[in-house]
Image (cartoon, rainbow, N blue to C red; front, side, top):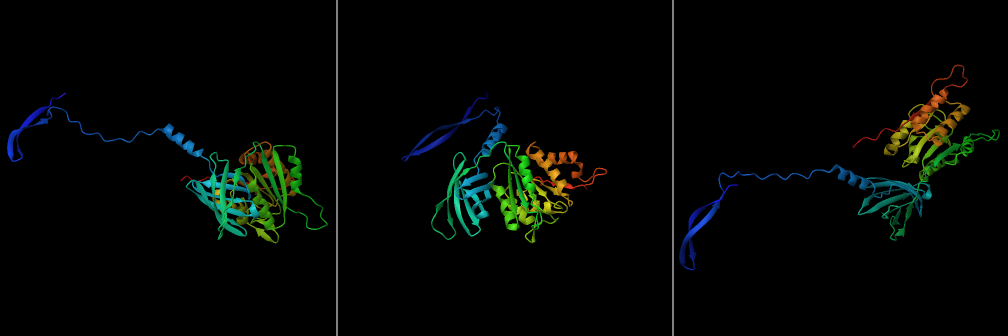
Length: 353
């Protein structure tokens, strides 16, 4: 180590009118000593394990995402970051949207004949919420509480929404939905719901009810079909109306047109576009005026692959045309049935931010 030296300088002190003289010594560093420049402060090294743990902890934080049982009926919510949207069963068509602020969901609601505002606050375990609401222009706040609906493991639903095929009293009654209900009664893991519709309003009502089932759902829309939509009540129910019923249904496994021509043109693509980020499930059907009995055989097999054998839609569709070649575009030699033209459309993968 270098040694320190001293330099001496004369100093005169003026104290209370008198002068004193002396010497002042200043220490100096040895010029031979190495001068080390100050080192810059480096940022703390990242800890991938710690960052991963923090990210996982954030993902485990309770959210409003999911299905809830409330004092205004069942409600399904979707949460993306701080934004929450959804619908609830009250009055067959009520919607809710809001943002998280200061630990609470501040929302507005819209019902067929009313609208208003409110807030929800999650319990610590994320299994319940408490809150209040008031109608637009009103002063009184009223309670709105809910508890999370638990998914029953292993259960799947087949929901058949069907038009009446008979056109007069001369026709015998028959129903594809009743056939499916009887067939799947043998599997206790499969729950079948069968409803009829007669116009756009009843079709939209029953499709919208799918929102409030907790477990995965396969939907069969069984009716006459056209390339641009579903004829019902003297009008065509098109992509926009169908998509509106299926929004927020991220538990739906498949939407299937049990009808002619629905996959001939752009109907499935248009539904996907209308759904936007809510397009989370595939849509299947036929590009031809499919034979009634031929399509029934196809769908018994198709739904069995999905519901009983638990294949994913892509694999079930691939197996279907292997097991029943006429389901696709090639007819067997000498077959009396024309190819059904089965098609399946998958949603576009989500784009990375």
